[in-house]
Amino acid sequence: MLYKRYIEIGRVCFIRLGDDIGKSGVIVDLVDQKHLLVDGPDGIGRKVVRLNQVALTDIKINIPRGCKTKTVRTAMAKEGVEAKLAATSLVKKFAAKNAKAQLGDFARFKNRVAKTASNRKIRSTVRKLKKSS
Amino acid sequence: WFAAVVSSVLSSGINAEYGGEKNGGTRTVPVQKSPRFYPTEDCKTPLKNRRVAKPTKLRGSIVPGSVVILLAGSHRGKRVVVLKQLPSGLLLVTGPYKINGVPLRRVDQTYVIATSTKVELPALPAIGDEIFKRKGKPTKNEKEMFVDNAGDNSYKISAEKVALQKEIDALVVPAVKKVDMLQSYLRSRFTLTKGQFPHEMKF
Image 1: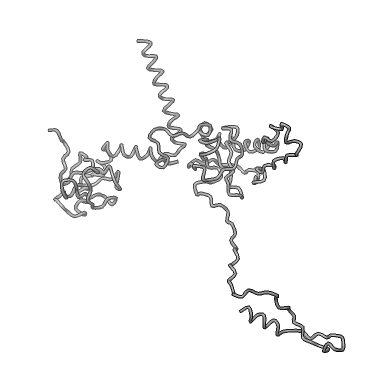
Image 2: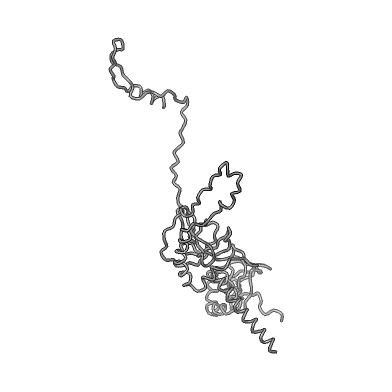
């Protein structure tokens, strides 16, 4: 099949745009062709979210359609969703991007210097290998 | 209101004795003479301005020792160390001179980006706004108008300033060297590259 992750009740999704960027929630219901009802840990709560704001993860839990927040929470805890989420590349990449944005001017300078130094090393090694071959 | 005051003033008086047969002996002389003029209409006098200028409020992110990026002037883009806020409200800043060529200089905090980096400064000698005061331009004589006198009026750094700079550098540079890579950081200039937007960056 072309698609592995479907929009379905219980699918855990990662919010990549908007106010709740970086947070994750479970799809609890579908509002229309372009909107989902999503429920997640206290960060988002229960809210309607646009499809394009959302990226689907591999994680899926078993919940009935439109169930209460309490049910969602217990199901999430039972499946260990938080730990699985932390392992997904979406969450990891977002965390790395966020960390980079929080760097101060001095940290950015140090990173640049380190990158230049490593690039120089890489280039000299490659040149040496080219010469020897 | 004014008329009432005038009449009350006129009514109070001293009894003064006058010489001369036909002068009546005594008469009441007013203690205060009535004014020669008063306006026809009472107008309100404006309240006195008792405002006292407060010292310029320094941004919370700027502290003695904080590294700051200069945004304007010949040293724009350079990262410098803030020594203190002067009584005039301006920031006293230095490269240190040994590191990036920025001398003891005054800078307005609005022309500066404050970074989160801070240097632990030792106790520094007291410096005020006085050392930055420039001597007035020499006035031209009539005779000298036709004489080419160029070059003399250029600003020359005083010896005391040079000595003060050396003294400050001797205190600040070791403090900078204590932090790893801080010296090379202060030597470098701040630039924007593609995709960098100051309003989105953290300093």
